[in-house]
Image (cartoon, rainbow, N blue to C red; front, side, top):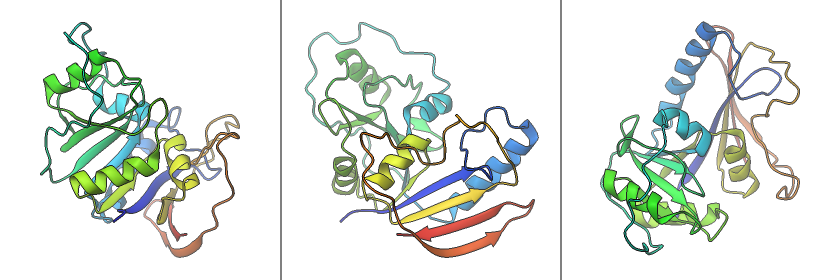
Length: 227
């Protein structure tokens, strides 16, 4: 069965999701509240895009020349009994992980078959799991199905960035949308919104039903919607 999928975002009052340029103290407090609320969903897997994961990994690249022969494009699960999984949407294999753990979660890379053999060899060498979900582009329906069937994922929380969150909503995979709206106006018009989908991929608006609205300490508002 498909996991219950929650898209959990944090944004300014004018809908911007990237925190660079925000006051450091404000950003830290907002991030702590965001994570505190995320834990209430009791998820067994969380998923982010490449850019976010590179920040978490403190990415410094990975060594070349590790593959001594072609590596089959088949799923590789180094651990199947983790309490929690960190799922990285990384189509071409760029995140330079240093270990197989991210924020106390076992890492699973989501790749396309266009990834290099060196990257696969590197992931194997540090005990990172990976799966394939497309030849050149990621099919999120495949991702969700594989996570459920192979790892038993029951509750998946999508934590961005904006393009990953937008893609999950656009694919019709999200059961619930959670947005922490902060008492801040960003004002950068070209900055990404909380949910971004390319014109080519966009299907139609996602209509939501308000489930709850709670004022948080400091003036933020936590909004929860269901499709």
